[in-house]
Amino acid sequence: MKLYLRYLAIHFKSQMQYKTSFFLTLIGQFLTAFSTFLGIWVMFTRFNTVKGFTYTEVSLCYAVVLMAFSLAETFFRGFDTFPRMIGNGEFDRILVRPRSPVFQVLGSKIDFTRLGRLLHAAVIFAWAIPRSGVNWNAANIATLCGMILAGSLVFAGLFLLYAGICFFTLDGLEVMNIFTDGSREFGRYPLSVYGDAVLRFLTFVVPIALFLYYPFLTLLGKSDSLLWRICPLFALLFLVPCYLVWRVGLLHYRSTGS
Image (cartoon, rainbow, N blue to C red):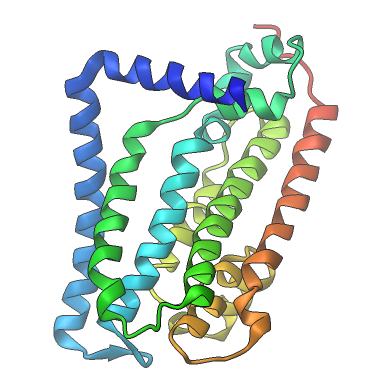
């Protein structure tokens, strides 16, 4: 933990060397997320509900997935930029150091400008939580926190899976953006809006629904299932195959010679 905190300090100091650029990028991330949220607002200026969900409920769902994705993109960014690390030979240096390769890749890139999206999600939370009609007792607060934490780890798992595939392709696969950025975009609305086929895919293949949709229904009082409330715990099982792909790729890695 001490070494990871040192990584955090190093990245923060390096990014603050260009303060104007840092804050402009931070504001840009905030405004980009805000423009996406405008699409939801425009939708609800025409329709009172979407598949039985109100504007406030959809806003709460949107804030959860955006905050989870922002945390993953901030602190697990190293896996997202992994193809460059393989291509320029930097990963060879990592392998000769007395630390876990996963840990070193994790600490290689921490992008604090992505917190602009996190700030936007916090603003939406501040607006939606008191208007959602949810009884914010201890169980519901714990469920909400579990959704955000599990969501950030699921997105981190997707980044890790992406990095594992890069061992075989030596370059990033743009198709993975369907699962990373695409999952974030799907999460703007409760997933039942997209139909049963998409809901099943995002339950059993990429478990976005496990940390987002099912526990969200318990928050809104649309379900009283204890199993659905603890679904974020099951979503964490997704990290196992992601790590296995990374391990298999690591065992088959051959230096680029650069």
